[in-house]
Image (cartoon, rainbow, N blue to C red; front, side, top):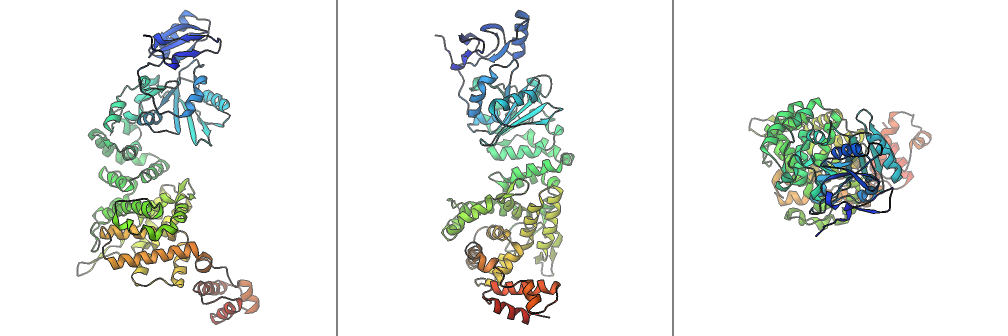
Length: 557
């Protein structure tokens, strides 16, 4: 029986005839017209033979797929590009994460291709074919990119790292990323896997391609942790050893690259485990030394963990809070399931808030996790122990804001991102302090809270829930938990439902009124009085212009 897969019949540009290439399954053929001029296990072999047999004619290279493979989960875009790839005189390979994810059954929107030569020229030919823009990424490395904005997909084309495909794959980080696929192939039978990446995928492990893979690029050490957590894989013993050995060399890479890996680590579903593994492998002390230094900082009850362990717990609870309160998704934690209905009216607004884009390509959700990561970073610097042995951290919020801002600036985060994290760290205690009164916060207190925190006050509310749960390893004292919930609900209610009345009321008077009507000279006094007037207005004590002027006159010094 002659098995023939659809890809075994190649329509050639110079002929309308169909060529049966089934006998060459699993190999490359070089076609001249409708004649097989060369066959080989590599495209180079097929091309050399064709040039020997038909030296004056240009051969086209095709990979003939074996019929016994399993279908791969590939981007539909490859189907569109296949006819173009079939009529090239050099091979094109899909490599790296796109092949890995095709085996895993996950669609990847970042498609990396390698070719022997002329990658930039190929990039622009494909861009013209698709009607999309193309860019030169690196002229020295002959690398280009096609961007498909509507499909949210990028196609990167580069030349081999080294003399051939094997050298290229040998220069990659982990075996699961060191596989290639002829760009026209569609099944597992055609995967080129010289380092047993398929086995490591099946065993769910992260293993280095070469023992010195991290020495060449130390930031790969962070990537090992991130990819392991992202896919639910474990690092082999050898990989762990190499990561720890490479950690001190992280400073040799740019701050921007380290920042980007930190962002991706926090964007995994388990940012707490990311920080935990970074600490265990020696990476945290290199990337975030201020956070790593919290490991030995003890705390008094009701805290039950040192500060770093508490910070990791806060991140774990923060994911749960965001899932339950914002996304309103079911959770196994009864502490949060019980309060979901109370926050349901704010969930859509909170979702929009966390989905907002921040400068530097970040979103609000990532910044919320940065808030949690840095919220207690000032505790080592501010720790005191009194005669009774009680540990205190007076001023740790202000100290922490300064430390967080400095570290984020070093890592080249945007000014907007830095400002939010500084604000969250500086004021993260405020909801807890409001809850200690046992009363619903007044309109004046709510106004002051959002005056100091702006929209970051919403993040602080969510962070306070996680902070409490991490401190007590659950609800703890039910009265304290109830009081905190009451405060945060009231803060959210005023922000989302009474913003123009309480949070940022439209001014009843302005500086010109004070100068013309009350004859107050221009200067700092004007601003001080206007702030007092707006606070009284937010508190509901002033409702008319005349009342505001009378109040302003009484505030004169």
